[in-house]
Length: 119
Image 1: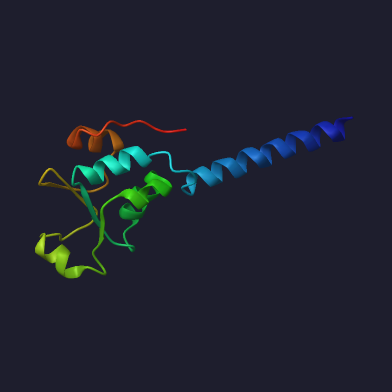
Image 2: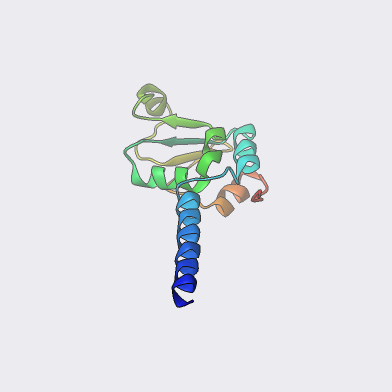
């Protein structure tokens, strides 16, 4: 009887751990509407695939990042140079540039996009 309970508890822990890992790795697209709104409002994120803070910001959006207007400065160097981007990440919102990772709450305030997580 104790072996069965131990196996059930272990199985439950494995399922919970797998779910947490999936969510942390960007599973789901819970911020699709928010990301689409940012793009519709003209917000742009400038970044680099080598930048830890850029990658953190991308992970925060998960799969919803596909809807963000993103400029990869290692591939579009002339665009970043024209925009005066000297460090990344940079968010351009309503014509103003904000350096560093930005919280969703801050991006919502700056853009006017409602922050609602989809399920």
